[in-house]
Image (cartoon, rainbow, N blue to C red; front, side):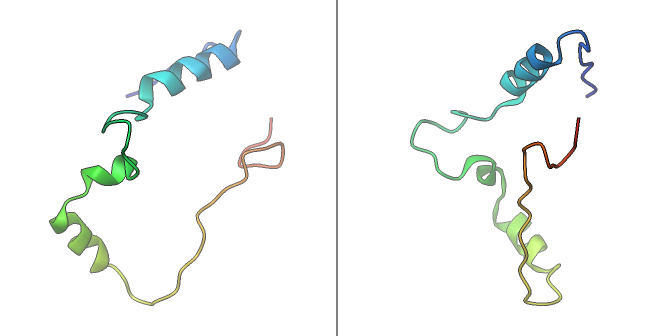
Length: 71
């Protein structure tokens, strides 16, 4: 699905897209898993089969003036 951004008012366009695609409350007020609720046992097993080394690394990104995109 392609979303066109109104470049004359990008803040409002981003707020509308954020609201439209938000998963907040999708699984109830007490949910702590979020979209992890979508994964079942077979998908977890498939993901675990992809592991080659036991190394972990952060996927976090800075969402400020330094990243992930400038401007």
